[in-house]
Length: 423
Image (cartoon, rainbow, N blue to C red):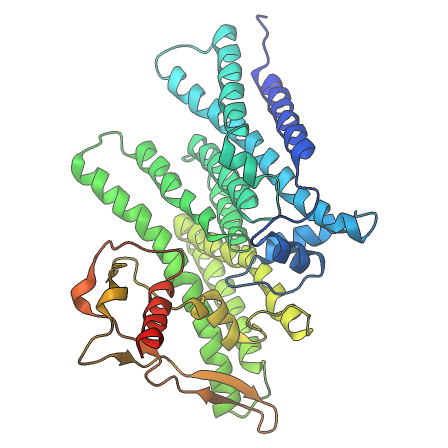
């Protein structure tokens, strides 16, 4: 016992917990199709088709791989359901290892880690991970073809990688974890955006590692900073990149007379050239932190490249081709989920808006025009200007941090139905 190898037993115990979770979920997995989105995910995964916005291309590609092992057509649904089974089991595995790292960090600050304490850490990690294994909501999501199990897995992986980065943060090779984290963040866009919610936690690990004196001021600033990074990636970095591709496609086709997709190719080449010169310049000048930042951005884009599946399969004319994101214009609308309408996260109408109705002075607002390809002219043409297309709801029923429903269009639909009823 004096030569207790914690690393070896940590691996063995982690994989033991993994197989307990895997066995539990496999024995209780949904054998066919369950209700809501599961049927769509099974179909679009097995045939690599285009599902509803904002899409889950990485999930679908992994589901397509699993469906290859189906003995016959009747087993395809089970195989795709097993994606969630394995993803959930891996979530438990990385949760076990993360708990172990946290406990080691806490105990080692005041005491020496001996054999007994290491055994207690392994036991506590197993209790924590297995307790989560059998929670109702997580167990439920582990049994069917939905994106939440894999999104939870990516969150568990991201937090584990962040803990490894925290250990080696100020070492010569510590930044390699940042690059790997950036890649997984990019991949999370191919499953579900909830994976990005790990970013604030990772930012706070950096804060507590590098700021030994915690004050109210720097604590509040740290929270603003980490939330700002999350919003930058989710609401600016990737949407603006897609807007750049969309604008480039429209300019080179409509203004320069080049064929369809030429603007998209040119925009892609410009981005590759930009990263090449930035990485070369920062490395030559010895700007280590800036070079790491550029590498992180690059690997986010590499992970996000799984989204290329959507326009590729949309152009293949698949049977299920929701919103048809076949070019840069349509892909931007697909990412922004424009079909659901828009609702501000900070300031917008409450649910009482359905009783308030439209603004009396300005009841409708214009939406941006919709461009589509015209094969005859070889250009993108406006097929709908969307004049007075958006209901402008009464400002008297708007407030900060409003109640936000699952679909922002629900109140609008309610108003429209009410109008039809009373008219």
